[in-house]
Image 1 (cartoon, rainbow, N blue to C red):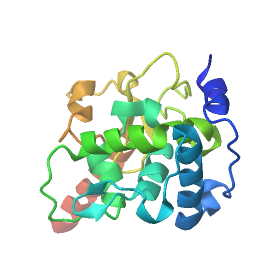
Image 2 (cartoon, one colour):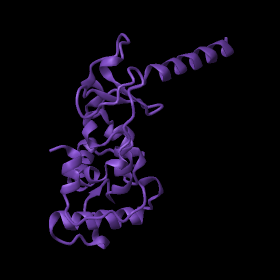
Image 3 (tube, rainbow, N blue to C red):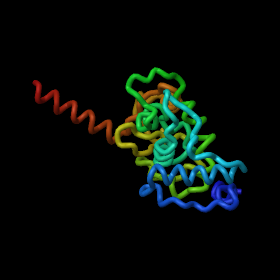
Image 4 (cartoon, rainbow, N blue to C red):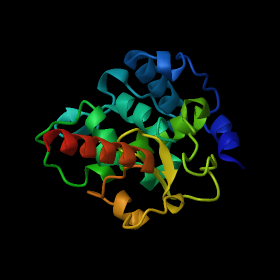
Length: 201
């Protein structure tokens, strides 16, 4: 069974009642998610108390978490998403003074618990970009070493980026991993720094 087939069958009786994600309000998203989870789990999810999870002292911002993850290729991309560096700062749970460790793993767990089946039931929400270096699109099979550029948010296969000194894939995907900057953004940054040096010389 494919993920798409499983997604269609995972929650019998469910019909999406929200507009497309780009036009969806937070309230519409939560209403639809609660209905989905109620049907999926076989018990009512009370909207007024949902979600029960708290992160960094604030009720978990599932709306932002979902939007950020699906915009980066969805949960299947997994470690190619910089959960702490790219997703967390766009959530209401983030603060500049956050000292919580393991936030990336906590976000993955919460996503898997509340949103993974919902994402599978809504494949249209997932942005499937192409690798800007090889132009391949396949994230479900084949290469699984996707990285998202921290500057332009384009996707790249780590194995396609042949620059010296790049480091290993795992260097970018672990907790406080390295920041990945694609070749195009790296060239722009270098050109900007060179111009700045010329002006000050």
